[in-house]
Amino acid sequence: MKNAKSFDDMEFTPLHRKIMLWGSGGPFLDGYILVIIGIALEQLIPQMQLDSNWIGLVGASTLVGLFVGTALFGYIADLFGRKLMFLIDIIAIGALSIATIFVSSPMELVIMRFLIGVVIGADYPIATSMVAEFSPTKHRAFTMGFIALMWYVGATCANAVGYMLYDLEDGWRWMLGSGVIPCLVILLGRFHLPESPRWLMQKGRIEECKQVMATYFGKEIALDVEEKKPTRYRDIFEKRNLRMVIFTGTIWSCQIIPMFAIYTFGPQIIGLLGLHDGKDAALGNILISVFFIAGCVPAMYWLNSIGRRPLLIGSFAIMTAALAVLGIVPNPGIGLVIAAFGLYAFFSGGPGILQWLYPNELFPTEIRASAVGAVMAFSRIGTILSTYALPLFMAKYGVSMTMLMGAVVSLVGFFISVTMAPETRGLALTETSSAKFG
Image (cartoon, rainbow, N blue to C red; front, side, top):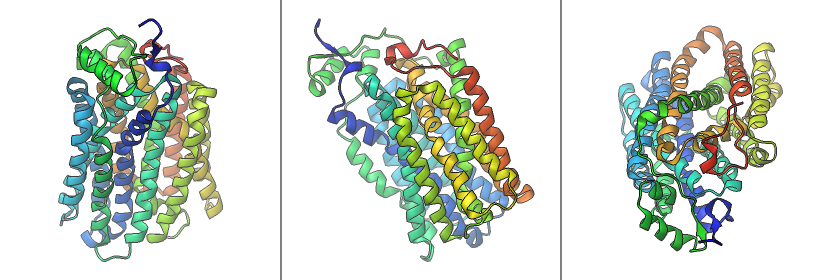
Protein backbone atom coordinates (compact mmCIF):
# COMPACT_ATOMS: atom_id res chain seq x y z
CA MET A 1 0.00 0.00 0.00
CA LYS A 2 1.94 2.97 -1.31
CA ASN A 3 0.32 5.73 0.74
CA ALA A 4 0.02 3.77 3.97
CA LYS A 5 1.30 5.43 7.10
CA SER A 6 3.89 3.48 9.09
CA PHE A 7 2.79 1.82 12.32
CA ASP A 8 5.87 3.35 13.99
CA ASP A 9 4.89 6.90 12.98
CA MET A 10 1.20 6.86 13.87
CA GLU A 11 -0.42 9.00 16.56
CA PHE A 12 -1.31 7.73 20.02
CA THR A 13 -4.76 6.09 20.01
CA PRO A 14 -7.17 4.93 22.75
CA LEU A 15 -5.91 1.38 22.19
CA HIS A 16 -2.33 2.49 22.83
CA ARG A 17 -3.48 4.05 26.12
CA LYS A 18 -5.28 0.87 27.16
CA ILE A 19 -2.28 -1.32 26.40
CA MET A 20 0.02 1.07 28.25
CA LEU A 21 -2.30 1.20 31.27
CA TRP A 22 -3.07 -2.49 31.63
CA GLY A 23 0.41 -3.54 30.53
CA SER A 24 1.78 -1.61 33.51
CA GLY A 25 -0.33 -3.73 35.87
CA GLY A 26 2.49 -6.22 36.46
CA PRO A 27 5.03 -3.57 37.52
CA PHE A 28 2.33 -2.00 39.73
CA LEU A 29 1.82 -5.35 41.46
CA ASP A 30 5.58 -5.87 41.72
CA GLY A 31 5.98 -2.54 43.51
CA TYR A 32 2.97 -3.26 45.69
CA ILE A 33 3.88 -6.80 46.70
CA LEU A 34 7.60 -6.15 47.22
CA VAL A 35 6.97 -3.11 49.41
CA ILE A 36 4.01 -4.36 51.44
CA ILE A 37 6.21 -7.07 52.96
CA GLY A 38 8.46 -4.38 54.46
CA ILE A 39 5.56 -3.02 56.50
CA ALA A 40 4.11 -6.46 57.25
CA LEU A 41 7.48 -7.47 58.69
CA GLU A 42 6.98 -4.97 61.51
CA GLN A 43 4.22 -7.26 62.81
CA LEU A 44 5.65 -10.55 61.54
CA ILE A 45 9.03 -10.22 63.27
CA PRO A 46 7.70 -10.42 66.85
CA GLN A 47 4.76 -12.71 66.02
CA MET A 48 6.78 -15.37 64.17
CA GLN A 49 10.00 -14.57 66.06
CA LEU A 50 11.96 -13.92 62.87
CA ASP A 51 15.71 -13.45 63.26
CA SER A 52 17.98 -11.73 60.72
CA ASN A 53 18.31 -14.91 58.64
CA TRP A 54 14.54 -15.37 58.32
CA ILE A 55 14.04 -11.68 57.54
CA GLY A 56 16.62 -11.92 54.78
CA LEU A 57 15.02 -15.09 53.40
CA VAL A 58 11.56 -13.53 53.35
CA GLY A 59 12.89 -10.48 51.50
CA ALA A 60 15.01 -12.48 49.06
CA SER A 61 12.47 -15.25 48.33
CA THR A 62 10.34 -13.02 46.14
CA LEU A 63 13.41 -11.92 44.20
CA VAL A 64 14.47 -15.54 43.66
CA GLY A 65 10.99 -16.17 42.30
CA LEU A 66 11.32 -13.15 40.03
CA PHE A 67 14.59 -14.60 38.73
CA VAL A 68 12.91 -17.90 37.84
CA GLY A 69 9.77 -16.30 36.40
CA THR A 70 11.53 -13.81 34.15
CA ALA A 71 14.10 -16.29 32.87
CA LEU A 72 11.47 -18.89 31.99
CA PHE A 73 8.33 -17.08 30.90
CA GLY A 74 9.91 -14.54 28.56
CA TYR A 75 10.88 -17.45 26.32
CA ILE A 76 7.40 -18.96 26.65
CA ALA A 77 5.86 -15.62 25.62
CA ASP A 78 8.08 -15.52 22.52
CA LEU A 79 6.93 -19.02 21.61
CA PHE A 80 3.20 -18.84 22.39
CA GLY A 81 2.32 -15.15 22.31
CA ARG A 82 1.89 -12.17 24.61
CA LYS A 83 -1.85 -12.17 25.27
CA LEU A 84 -2.33 -15.68 26.70
CA MET A 85 0.37 -15.32 29.34
CA PHE A 86 -0.75 -11.72 29.86
CA LEU A 87 -3.94 -13.12 31.45
CA ILE A 88 -2.73 -16.32 33.13
CA ASP A 89 -0.06 -14.66 35.26
CA ILE A 90 -2.46 -12.07 36.73
CA ILE A 91 -4.90 -14.83 37.75
CA ALA A 92 -2.03 -16.68 39.45
CA ILE A 93 -0.86 -13.57 41.33
CA GLY A 94 -4.36 -13.01 42.71
CA ALA A 95 -4.75 -16.65 43.80
CA LEU A 96 -1.38 -16.66 45.57
CA SER A 97 -2.15 -13.36 47.32
CA ILE A 98 -5.25 -14.95 48.84
CA ALA A 99 -3.31 -18.09 49.82
CA THR A 100 -0.69 -15.98 51.64
CA ILE A 101 -3.34 -14.85 54.13
CA PHE A 102 -3.31 -18.35 55.65
CA VAL A 103 0.43 -18.93 56.21
CA SER A 104 1.34 -19.97 59.75
CA SER A 105 5.12 -20.39 59.76
CA PRO A 106 8.23 -18.62 58.44
CA MET A 107 8.89 -21.41 55.93
CA GLU A 108 5.35 -21.21 54.53
CA LEU A 109 5.78 -17.45 54.16
CA VAL A 110 9.08 -17.90 52.30
CA ILE A 111 7.50 -20.46 49.94
CA MET A 112 4.48 -18.27 49.16
CA ARG A 113 6.67 -15.22 48.56
CA PHE A 114 8.82 -17.28 46.19
CA LEU A 115 5.79 -18.47 44.20
CA ILE A 116 4.28 -15.02 43.93
CA GLY A 117 7.68 -13.77 42.73
CA VAL A 118 7.65 -16.38 39.95
CA VAL A 119 4.32 -15.21 38.52
CA ILE A 120 5.15 -11.50 38.91
CA GLY A 121 8.45 -12.17 37.16
CA ALA A 122 6.54 -13.82 34.34
CA ASP A 123 4.60 -10.64 33.70
CA TYR A 124 7.64 -8.38 33.21
CA PRO A 125 8.90 -9.62 29.83
CA ILE A 126 5.38 -10.38 28.58
CA ALA A 127 3.80 -7.02 29.41
CA THR A 128 6.75 -4.80 28.50
CA SER A 129 7.21 -6.54 25.14
CA MET A 130 3.51 -6.08 24.45
CA VAL A 131 3.66 -2.36 25.26
CA ALA A 132 6.90 -1.77 23.31
CA GLU A 133 5.63 -3.60 20.23
CA PHE A 134 2.48 -1.48 20.08
CA SER A 135 4.18 1.86 20.84
CA PRO A 136 4.92 4.35 18.04
CA THR A 137 8.57 5.45 17.97
CA LYS A 138 8.07 8.96 19.36
CA HIS A 139 5.88 7.67 22.20
CA ARG A 140 7.98 4.65 23.22
CA ALA A 141 9.90 6.47 25.97
CA PHE A 142 6.61 7.75 27.36
CA THR A 143 4.93 4.33 27.45
CA MET A 144 7.97 2.67 29.03
CA GLY A 145 8.18 5.60 31.44
CA PHE A 146 4.59 5.00 32.43
CA ILE A 147 5.46 1.36 33.22
CA ALA A 148 8.32 2.50 35.48
CA LEU A 149 6.04 5.10 37.07
CA MET A 150 3.45 2.44 37.93
CA TRP A 151 6.04 0.45 39.90
CA TYR A 152 6.39 3.45 42.21
CA VAL A 153 2.63 4.00 42.29
CA GLY A 154 2.25 0.39 43.41
CA ALA A 155 4.89 0.92 46.09
CA THR A 156 3.14 4.08 47.30
CA CYS A 157 -0.22 2.30 47.47
CA ALA A 158 1.42 -0.50 49.48
CA ASN A 159 2.71 1.99 52.04
CA ALA A 160 -0.71 3.64 52.29
CA VAL A 161 -2.50 0.28 52.72
CA GLY A 162 0.11 -0.86 55.23
CA TYR A 163 -0.35 2.32 57.23
CA MET A 164 -4.13 1.86 57.35
CA LEU A 165 -3.97 -1.83 58.31
CA TYR A 166 -1.06 -1.59 60.74
CA ASP A 167 -3.12 -1.39 63.93
CA LEU A 168 -5.42 -4.30 63.06
CA GLU A 169 -4.89 -7.61 64.79
CA ASP A 170 -3.08 -9.84 62.28
CA GLY A 171 -3.04 -6.85 59.96
CA TRP A 172 -0.09 -8.39 58.12
CA ARG A 173 -2.40 -11.09 56.73
CA TRP A 174 -4.68 -8.51 55.13
CA MET A 175 -1.67 -6.55 53.88
CA LEU A 176 -0.26 -9.56 52.05
CA GLY A 177 -3.67 -10.70 50.78
CA SER A 178 -4.74 -7.26 49.56
CA GLY A 179 -2.90 -7.76 46.25
CA VAL A 180 -5.91 -9.70 44.94
CA ILE A 181 -7.90 -6.46 44.56
CA PRO A 182 -5.69 -4.81 41.90
CA CYS A 183 -5.33 -8.25 40.25
CA LEU A 184 -9.06 -8.38 39.59
CA VAL A 185 -9.09 -4.86 38.14
CA ILE A 186 -6.09 -5.56 35.88
CA LEU A 187 -7.55 -8.86 34.68
CA LEU A 188 -10.77 -7.16 33.57
CA GLY A 189 -8.77 -4.45 31.77
CA ARG A 190 -6.53 -6.92 29.92
CA PHE A 191 -9.20 -9.36 28.85
CA HIS A 192 -10.20 -7.70 25.54
CA LEU A 193 -6.76 -6.51 24.38
CA PRO A 194 -5.48 -7.93 21.04
CA GLU A 195 -2.37 -9.99 20.40
CA SER A 196 0.76 -8.09 19.34
CA PRO A 197 0.72 -7.70 15.53
CA ARG A 198 4.54 -7.68 15.47
CA TRP A 199 4.61 -11.08 17.18
CA LEU A 200 1.93 -12.43 14.82
CA MET A 201 3.94 -11.26 11.80
CA GLN A 202 7.14 -12.74 13.19
CA LYS A 203 5.41 -16.09 13.61
CA GLY A 204 4.12 -16.02 10.02
CA ARG A 205 0.49 -15.55 11.08
CA ILE A 206 0.01 -12.85 8.47
CA GLU A 207 -3.77 -13.01 8.14
CA GLU A 208 -4.24 -12.65 11.90
CA CYS A 209 -1.78 -9.75 11.89
CA LYS A 210 -3.71 -8.03 9.09
CA GLN A 211 -6.98 -8.56 10.94
CA VAL A 212 -5.63 -6.96 14.14
CA MET A 213 -4.23 -4.02 12.17
CA ALA A 214 -7.46 -3.47 10.21
CA THR A 215 -9.72 -3.82 13.25
CA TYR A 216 -7.82 -1.50 15.57
CA PHE A 217 -5.90 0.89 13.30
CA GLY A 218 -7.51 0.81 9.87
CA LYS A 219 -6.19 -0.35 6.52
CA GLU A 220 -4.24 2.88 5.97
CA ILE A 221 -1.68 1.90 8.66
CA ALA A 222 1.13 -0.42 7.56
CA LEU A 223 3.34 -2.49 9.85
CA ASP A 224 6.99 -2.61 8.82
CA VAL A 225 7.86 -6.10 7.62
CA GLU A 226 10.35 -8.02 9.76
CA GLU A 227 12.20 -11.04 8.48
CA LYS A 228 10.65 -14.18 9.93
CA LYS A 229 13.12 -15.90 12.24
CA PRO A 230 12.72 -18.79 14.68
CA THR A 231 12.69 -18.12 18.41
CA ARG A 232 15.87 -19.68 19.75
CA TYR A 233 16.91 -18.91 23.30
CA ARG A 234 20.56 -19.50 22.45
CA ASP A 235 20.48 -16.43 20.17
CA ILE A 236 20.57 -14.29 23.31
CA PHE A 237 24.14 -15.49 23.83
CA GLU A 238 25.44 -14.42 20.44
CA LYS A 239 28.26 -11.89 20.78
CA ARG A 240 26.31 -8.66 20.30
CA ASN A 241 23.18 -9.82 22.11
CA LEU A 242 25.20 -11.10 25.05
CA ARG A 243 26.95 -7.75 25.35
CA MET A 244 23.55 -6.04 25.44
CA VAL A 245 22.36 -8.45 28.13
CA ILE A 246 25.43 -7.64 30.25
CA PHE A 247 25.03 -3.88 29.75
CA THR A 248 21.30 -3.67 30.43
CA GLY A 249 21.45 -6.22 33.25
CA THR A 250 24.25 -4.29 34.96
CA ILE A 251 22.58 -0.87 34.84
CA TRP A 252 19.33 -2.50 36.00
CA SER A 253 21.19 -4.08 38.93
CA CYS A 254 22.91 -0.83 39.86
CA GLN A 255 19.61 1.03 39.88
CA ILE A 256 17.49 -1.48 41.76
CA ILE A 257 19.91 -2.89 44.36
CA PRO A 258 19.88 0.34 46.41
CA MET A 259 16.21 0.96 45.55
CA PHE A 260 15.04 -2.51 46.60
CA ALA A 261 17.07 -2.22 49.78
CA ILE A 262 15.36 1.08 50.55
CA TYR A 263 11.87 -0.22 49.79
CA THR A 264 12.00 -3.79 51.10
CA PHE A 265 13.33 -2.70 54.46
CA GLY A 266 12.25 0.93 54.20
CA PRO A 267 10.57 1.24 57.61
CA GLN A 268 13.59 -0.23 59.41
CA ILE A 269 16.12 1.89 57.48
CA ILE A 270 14.19 5.14 57.89
CA GLY A 271 13.72 4.39 61.59
CA LEU A 272 17.48 3.99 62.04
CA LEU A 273 18.06 7.25 60.17
CA GLY A 274 15.89 9.27 62.53
CA LEU A 275 12.22 8.88 61.63
CA HIS A 276 9.90 6.91 63.90
CA ASP A 277 9.79 3.15 63.65
CA GLY A 278 6.74 1.06 62.85
CA LYS A 279 3.57 2.58 61.50
CA ASP A 280 4.88 6.14 61.15
CA ALA A 281 7.87 5.00 59.09
CA ALA A 282 5.40 4.06 56.33
CA LEU A 283 4.65 7.77 56.01
CA GLY A 284 8.35 8.40 55.40
CA ASN A 285 8.28 5.79 52.65
CA ILE A 286 5.26 7.46 51.06
CA LEU A 287 7.17 10.73 50.95
CA ILE A 288 10.14 9.01 49.31
CA SER A 289 7.80 7.32 46.82
CA VAL A 290 6.45 10.72 45.83
CA PHE A 291 9.99 11.71 44.82
CA PHE A 292 10.38 8.48 42.79
CA ILE A 293 7.10 9.19 41.01
CA ALA A 294 8.04 12.83 40.43
CA GLY A 295 11.37 11.76 38.92
CA CYS A 296 9.70 9.54 36.32
CA VAL A 297 7.48 12.27 34.86
CA PRO A 298 10.14 14.66 33.47
CA ALA A 299 12.38 11.70 32.53
CA MET A 300 9.67 10.49 30.12
CA TYR A 301 10.25 13.66 28.09
CA TRP A 302 13.98 14.09 28.77
CA LEU A 303 14.63 10.69 27.16
CA ASN A 304 13.52 12.18 23.84
CA SER A 305 14.87 15.72 24.31
CA ILE A 306 18.17 14.99 26.07
CA GLY A 307 18.61 11.43 24.86
CA ARG A 308 18.97 8.03 26.50
CA ARG A 309 22.74 8.02 27.01
CA PRO A 310 23.29 11.50 28.54
CA LEU A 311 20.35 11.12 30.90
CA LEU A 312 21.56 7.74 32.12
CA ILE A 313 25.10 8.98 32.82
CA GLY A 314 24.00 12.18 34.58
CA SER A 315 21.41 10.41 36.69
CA PHE A 316 23.84 7.81 38.03
CA ALA A 317 26.30 10.57 38.95
CA ILE A 318 23.71 12.41 41.06
CA MET A 319 22.33 9.21 42.62
CA THR A 320 25.83 8.19 43.70
CA ALA A 321 26.43 11.56 45.37
CA ALA A 322 23.09 11.44 47.23
CA LEU A 323 23.76 8.02 48.77
CA ALA A 324 27.35 8.96 49.59
CA VAL A 325 26.14 11.94 51.64
CA LEU A 326 24.02 9.66 53.82
CA GLY A 327 27.02 7.39 54.36
CA ILE A 328 29.57 10.11 55.10
CA VAL A 329 27.66 12.63 57.24
CA PRO A 330 27.51 11.43 60.87
CA ASN A 331 24.09 11.53 62.54
CA PRO A 332 22.23 13.22 59.67
CA GLY A 333 19.11 15.11 60.68
CA ILE A 334 15.69 14.29 59.36
CA GLY A 335 15.88 17.15 56.84
CA LEU A 336 19.12 15.87 55.30
CA VAL A 337 17.83 12.28 55.26
CA ILE A 338 14.68 13.24 53.38
CA ALA A 339 16.61 15.58 51.04
CA ALA A 340 19.23 12.94 50.15
CA PHE A 341 16.71 10.15 49.70
CA GLY A 342 14.50 12.52 47.72
CA LEU A 343 17.39 13.51 45.42
CA TYR A 344 18.29 9.87 44.86
CA ALA A 345 14.66 8.98 44.18
CA PHE A 346 14.02 11.87 41.80
CA PHE A 347 17.06 11.24 39.61
CA SER A 348 16.48 7.49 39.55
CA GLY A 349 13.61 8.25 37.15
CA GLY A 350 15.82 8.12 34.05
CA PRO A 351 17.60 4.83 34.86
CA GLY A 352 14.30 3.44 36.17
CA ILE A 353 12.68 3.95 32.77
CA LEU A 354 15.72 2.84 30.79
CA GLN A 355 15.86 -0.48 32.62
CA TRP A 356 12.55 -1.20 30.84
CA LEU A 357 13.17 0.75 27.65
CA TYR A 358 16.64 -0.42 26.63
CA PRO A 359 15.98 -4.20 26.70
CA ASN A 360 12.79 -3.82 24.68
CA GLU A 361 14.56 -1.59 22.14
CA LEU A 362 17.82 -3.45 21.72
CA PHE A 363 16.54 -6.94 20.87
CA PRO A 364 14.50 -8.13 17.85
CA THR A 365 10.90 -9.34 18.09
CA GLU A 366 11.65 -13.06 17.88
CA ILE A 367 13.68 -12.96 21.14
CA ARG A 368 12.46 -9.70 22.72
CA ALA A 369 10.56 -11.19 25.66
CA SER A 370 13.23 -13.87 26.13
CA ALA A 371 15.93 -11.19 26.26
CA VAL A 372 13.97 -8.97 28.66
CA GLY A 373 13.54 -12.01 30.89
CA ALA A 374 17.25 -12.84 30.68
CA VAL A 375 18.24 -9.25 31.48
CA MET A 376 15.92 -9.11 34.45
CA ALA A 377 17.13 -12.50 35.70
CA PHE A 378 20.73 -11.26 35.35
CA SER A 379 19.91 -8.17 37.40
CA ARG A 380 18.17 -10.18 40.11
CA ILE A 381 21.28 -12.17 41.01
CA GLY A 382 22.85 -9.19 42.75
CA THR A 383 19.52 -8.04 44.10
CA ILE A 384 18.77 -11.43 45.68
CA LEU A 385 22.14 -11.53 47.39
CA SER A 386 21.95 -7.93 48.57
CA THR A 387 18.40 -8.26 49.90
CA TYR A 388 19.31 -11.36 51.88
CA ALA A 389 22.52 -9.79 53.16
CA LEU A 390 21.08 -6.34 53.93
CA PRO A 391 19.66 -7.01 57.42
CA LEU A 392 22.84 -8.90 58.38
CA PHE A 393 25.11 -6.17 56.99
CA MET A 394 23.06 -3.39 58.57
CA ALA A 395 23.05 -5.12 61.96
CA LYS A 396 26.84 -5.54 61.88
CA TYR A 397 28.06 -2.31 60.24
CA GLY A 398 25.22 0.18 60.66
CA VAL A 399 23.11 2.19 58.26
CA SER A 400 25.85 4.66 57.26
CA MET A 401 28.07 1.93 55.85
CA THR A 402 25.01 0.42 54.14
CA MET A 403 24.37 3.71 52.35
CA LEU A 404 28.04 3.92 51.33
CA MET A 405 27.81 0.47 49.78
CA GLY A 406 24.73 1.65 47.89
CA ALA A 407 26.77 4.59 46.59
CA VAL A 408 29.48 2.18 45.38
CA VAL A 409 26.89 0.13 43.48
CA SER A 410 25.51 3.29 41.88
CA LEU A 411 29.04 4.36 40.94
CA VAL A 412 29.49 1.09 39.04
CA GLY A 413 26.33 1.98 37.11
CA PHE A 414 27.86 5.33 36.22
CA PHE A 415 31.05 3.82 34.78
CA ILE A 416 29.15 1.13 32.84
CA SER A 417 26.92 3.85 31.37
CA VAL A 418 29.89 5.94 30.28
CA THR A 419 31.59 3.03 28.53
CA MET A 420 28.63 1.12 27.06
CA ALA A 421 25.36 3.10 26.87
CA PRO A 422 23.98 3.36 23.28
CA GLU A 423 21.73 6.11 21.90
CA THR A 424 18.44 4.81 20.49
CA ARG A 425 16.44 8.04 20.47
CA GLY A 426 14.23 8.41 17.38
CA LEU A 427 14.87 4.90 16.03
CA ALA A 428 12.08 2.47 15.11
CA LEU A 429 12.09 -0.97 16.75
CA THR A 430 13.29 -2.45 13.46
CA GLU A 431 16.37 -0.16 13.71
CA THR A 432 17.25 -0.22 17.42
CA SER A 433 18.66 -3.76 17.31
CA SER A 434 21.61 -2.35 15.34
CA ALA A 435 22.24 0.62 17.68
CA LYS A 436 25.91 1.08 18.52
CA PHE A 437 27.29 1.06 22.06
CA GLY A 438 28.87 4.14 23.52
